[in-house]
Amino acid sequence: MILELQNAILEMIAKGEPLAATMEQLCLEVEAAVPGIIASVLTFDGSRLHTLAGPSLPPHYSAAVDNLEASPLAGSCGAAAYFGEAVIVTDIETDPRWQDFKSLVLPLGLKACWSSPIKRGEQVIGSFAFYYRDHRGPKAIERDLVDACVHLCIIAIDREERVMERQRLTYSDALTGLSNRARFNQLLAEELPRSRRAWGILLVDIDNLKLVNDTFGHAAGDALIQVVADRIAATAGPKNTFRLGGDEFAVIVSDDKDLDLNVRATDILKALSSPSTCDGHVVFPAATIGGALAEMEPNPNQIRQNADVALYHAKEHNRGRYVQHYPGLGTALEEDRIDAHYQPILRLDTREIVGFEALCRMTTPSGEIIAAAHFHEATKDAHIAAELTQRMLLRVARDIRSWLARGLPLQHVGINLSAADFRGGNLQDRLCRIFGEAEVPLKHIILEVTESVYLGQRDYVVAEEIKALRSKGLRVALDDFGTGYASLTHLLTVPVDIIKIDKSFIDRMVPGDAGTFIVEGLIGIADKLGIRVVAEGIETESQAAQLCQLGCKLGQGYLFSKAVDRTAAAAILEQHGQWPNKDKTRAGAR
Image 1: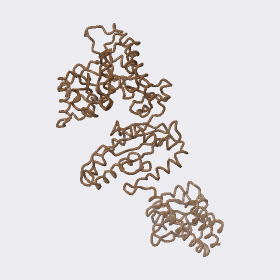
Image 2: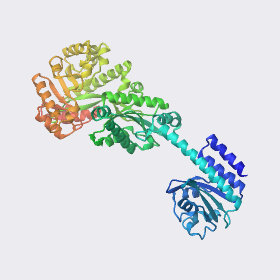
Image 3: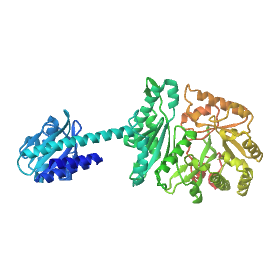
Image 4: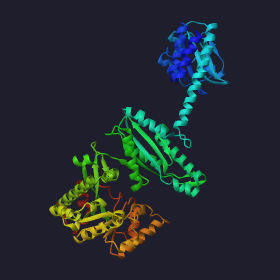
């Protein structure tokens, strides 16, 4: 009997059957050999017992003893694990070791319990128990049987621990202790395709790891990686966080309800923002994040690729921030879900609105408004990019015509153009035709072009086109000034009417920071060259006041307003526009 039992269980162990299934089969084999008993196996972690197998015990009882703390009065199994010795209780109802647990077991018709510790050397790693339906202890044959069972349990548990350790080494990152790229790939291939929950992927890239390595050494760099790992895991959960290698991490976000990856990414960026001491050096961790949701695309590898595309774009254009991949821009164009929103440009002294910057927005099928930065990658398709610009031009022309017809005090609207718009041909003809048909004078249009577009073309295609457009009465603004190719000397040679100082300089306008002096210098030089200045990204009253003191007359930013739809834009223009006659009855302008 014992030999047959050993052979059956050893075969299961050799085949690599799951530990719980093997132990359940062991209990069933024993119960068949000794009628009238119920067998159970618990594991022991050094302080608490955990249910491993007890196929003939009710689930509520197994759950009640799971995570039981070992002690002299914790039933037969708890006492056996605590002392490392077998504990025989022939009367559960009267034995003090069962005082707190007898109400669980007596209704099951069980009256006695014999528990033997499962030991590896002197270390207790579990317990093996027989429950009896009458008041008695073990018989001689049962002692021999339990000795064999305990030995089999040791073999099975040892094998399981070795397997788990191999898996830990295979699927864990040595530096951070997080799951590694192999485990991440395994989830993508095996588990996520079967998931019925909403999920998405965030890819997190440390911004300044190379700088830390080069400046402070690789020990500081490793410490930075560990800090970032700990903070991401604390925010997203260690089971959901993976180190893919180098400076890149991944987070799988999953929920039964709708997910907001932007909120999760913002939480991670906030958690990373505080300084940390890395190998004796104070380092300010920072990261860039790209993300993608598994919405219309069921292939996890494609979702990962989408997140990677978003991360690439974020590193190129929005370093230190989060960018989400939004598929289906072509579909959005077909379904008329692309529209213009308008951010006011104001006089900083009077807070009167003098114009707007037109910003592209996409509405998702669920109604969410998405900024252009989040679907920029889709515009790399030349046909989509051209259609997007065409849609924006038509929308802006229609809106300006409507505002002018109402007599609203609109001076100008800025429209962003890309290199593809200039290289697509017929830009001048398109602009003149669209705004001409809408009866919008070109003096109301400002073309906003980034430094990289305007100054990055060696064959001067863009520059020549801009000169031609300016001759038609259009004005040109150099956007995000200071972040790309431009230097002050370029202002002497390139034909621009306005420079828009990038938000990164405005953010640094604090006492003692060189950013203030740079902004002051730009304003002074632009003024002498007859170039107007707009400060971008103003978020505080102190920034606005400081810019006024430096002589900057115009600005835009969240302090005043985010980009709003055409209806809201018209309302705030009527309320806060720069009316030529202050006493004019505004209602009459409608």
